[in-house]
Image 1 (cartoon, rainbow, N blue to C red):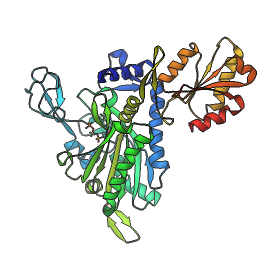
Image 2 (cartoon, helix red, strand yellow; image 1 turned 45 degrees about the horizontal axis):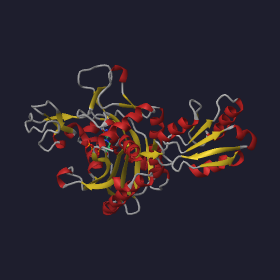
Image 3 (cartoon, rainbow, N blue to C red; image 1 turned 90 degrees about the vertical axis):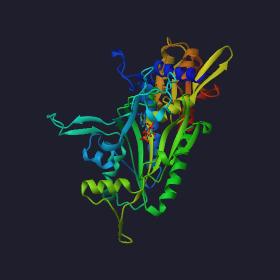
Length: 434
Ligand code: ATP
C-alpha cells in the first residue's frame, strides 16, 4: 500500500468510526486542531493510563502531579520560552508555501524552488491576559509544555513526600503551541497533550539514569504492541542541543510520512532548577540530610506526546487481510489499548430472550472493562465493524444459547470461535483481557 493511501485510510477510518474528527468541522474546520470522538476518547485514556501505570504506579521512585495550564508569567522568562521558544519561518516566493526553516534544507518541498523570503522568528506561545485590563501589563501564557509546572513544584513535592534522590515527578496534561506549519493529521497540533517526567538525580548518577530512561521509554512502546522495526532511537547532534543540555535522544516512529519524533528524552543538567532559583529568589537546591549537603540535582526528562503516540499506535495496528473474497480491516491494538474489550451481539434482535441475555452478559462485565452491546446489523457486518475498531472479543448470543447456556466467543486476531458456557464466561474473559 502506498504511504499516502495508508494515511488516507487511517484518517478516513478515524472519522467514520469516531476516533478523531476535524475540529470545528461545521464551521469549515480549524488548522492543526482535532477532536477525539467516542472511541478516540477511550483510546486516549488507555494510552494515558498505560503510561501512568508504567511510570508512576509500577515504580517506587516516581510520583504524580497535576499543575495548572496558566502559571506565573515569570516562569516562562526563567525557562527561556519568552526569549527563545521561536520557530523561524520562511515563505517560498514561487508557490507562496510557508515552512519552518529547520524542516526544508533550503529547497521548497512543494515546488523545488530555492527562492525564499528572509526568515522571521515567531514565538509559539499563546498569549492571554489575567484580569479585566488589556493593557499588556497582565500578559500570561498557555503553557507550551507541562515540564515547568513540575520544576516550580519541586520543593513542594520533596517536602510533602520526603523523597530522596533519585526520584521523579510525572504529569500528563494539555500544552499549547501556535504551530503555523501544516501538520500531518494529529502529529502536529496547536492544542495537544504531553506525558512528561522530570527525574531528579545526583549529578554523578545522571548518565546512568539517562541511559536507563532511554531504554525504558523505548520498551514501553514495544510492550504496548508497537513493532520494533517501526521504532528507532535518534541521538541529537551537537547543533540540535540546547546550550545547557548534556544529551538528547528521540524515540522516532516510522509514520507513512517518514521517521518522526514521538518522544524525546533529554539530559538537562541542572539548568531548570538553577534558573527558577535565580528568577524566583527561592532556593530550589536539594538538601541531602544524610551527608548534610545542598546541591542542584541533575534532571533527566522523558517527554512524550499523547496524540503522537496514539497516532503511531493507530498506524502500527492498522492491518488489511484477505479473507476469501473480502478485505478484512482489523486494528490489532494491544489488550491495554483496545478501546472496546468485548462486544455483545445478539444473533436475532427480534428475539427478546436473546437480546435480554446479551444485555445481561454485558452488564456483568461492564464494570471490569469497556464493553458494548450492538444489534444494529447482521452478524457478519457486526464482526467486521468490531474488527475495524480493534475490539478484542465478540460474544454472540444465539437461539441455542437459550437451551445449552453457551455463547460463541470470537477472537479478533485469529477469528477462531469457541463455545463457552455462561458459568465460565466471565472468568474466561477476565483471564484473557486483564
Ligand atoms: P517538533 O520538533 O516536532 O516540533 P519538539 O521537539 O518541539 O517537536 P518537544 O518540545 O520535545 O517537541 O515535546 C515533547 C513531545 O511533545 C514531542 O515528542 C511530541 O510527542 C509532543 N509534541 C510537541 N509538539 C507537538 C505538537 N505541536 N502536536 C502534538 N504533539 C506535540
